[in-house]
Length: 164
Image 1 (spheres, rainbow, N blue to C red):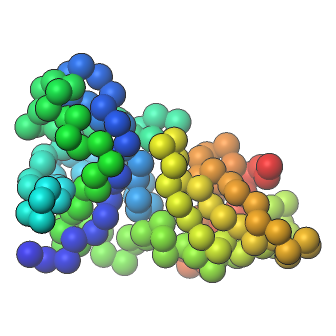
Image 2 (image 1 turned 120 degrees about the vertical axis):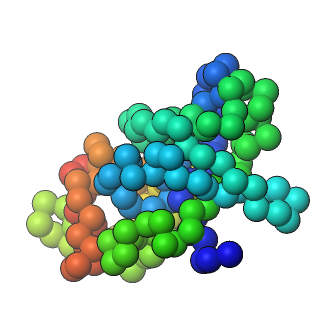
Image 3 (image 1 turned 60 degrees about the horizontal axis):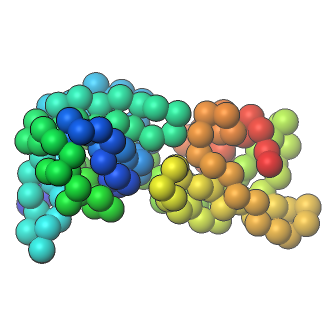
């Protein structure tokens, strides 16, 4: 099998119709390109296929409906699993895995305030762990539009709209 890229982590079931809430593990603007794609999840060491039928973004998560499932009971098994997509199915050169943002400069109000040292995912969303220059402490920033204004991949900079 081609190299697989982690795209989503399924957090929990969302509705009785078999939808799930998930966190995206890559930066990708065009969600439509993921609809009707065959993803894979690992079950007892074997990769099982799943096709996304519908995908929509909420504040910080994504609601996914699969062609293969129609009830909450069917998707309960997916809680905590990662959905993979073959690398060839994603745009080349534009793909950024959130984990790859480590060591990016973090800027607020046109001033560099720190360096991204780590990322981790909670049930709600991805968290950026930023090492602050001015006091040598760690600040946790949720990766949501309210806080993160832009990620400049070319210059390796994360621009914040708001800090905690």
